[in-house]
Length: 384
Image 1 (spheres, rainbow, N blue to C red):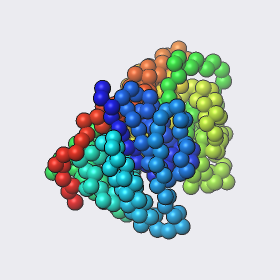
Image 2: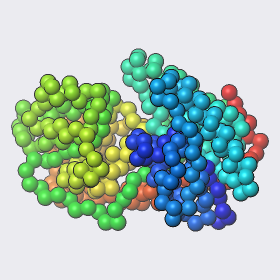
Image 3: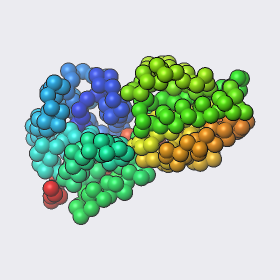
Image 4: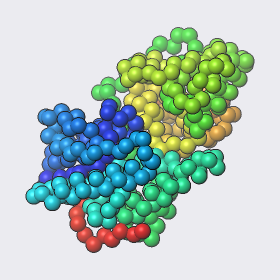
């Protein structure tokens, strides 16, 4: 195809910033840069030189926000600096002609770029708050999503239940909603399923917070401990968060291990050692940890929230659970424990195939390029 020069606008790049969106930015950039006919300029707030020079990625530094000041005000100012840097690059001969903005990197002066802009708001957590406090805190970010989405040519949905949210947000405008999933690094061959010795090892990876369903998991572990399954199931919980110290101080059921924060190498070992993965989250985007478990050929138990249903073939690669339903979680854990190792291995293999065919980074990066390649200046007008 003819050369496509893409601008990727970010608020940070992993490992300089460790969030999920920042990791997504790095991997997406690295994989898009390998696609023939693609030229990439990445705008970020770090010292340049983050990417392997062999990839040919041009990096543009944008001065970062001041974390001591009001976040939204600093984000507005950062987006203004981003707009100025982006415009300067676009004014150059052969400058970028398609723009992908991660989160709110493009906000101030957004209508200057509307016809060439695809914005990716990621998990839309601000639309999924459960408590009054969460909904109140999410209000300004819902307004911000509405503004950037309605003033872009395209807005990215991770799929599933997130697409109707965005369709409602952009209703009455020319903005198109395009579905592009999260992605994962998939090994060339499915990792072997572990020996079926001792208890069923279930792995959880995530923040210790109410929305992740930690209370549900603890309740199921306690119920199993006191029931006829006894020590047949072991829960291994990796991560920290606002509830971590509460549980560690109060004590947890004997079949629960609190692993705390783990590094990438240890996380790989945990995926390889587990018999299954569990995430009883109450709301979510498209959980990368589920994709990672699939890439390691492990069956998954995950709540039917956000775009999770895009990842699981119920009964074939895992189980989808009603969010917040402790009984459904208990029954799913029991069902997996009663399933023979051969069938669990086949479930994991089905998830691995799905990850490799639909969610591997080379596949998803190419889908991003396809969604960007026909972006060009037009009469697309911003809408407030």
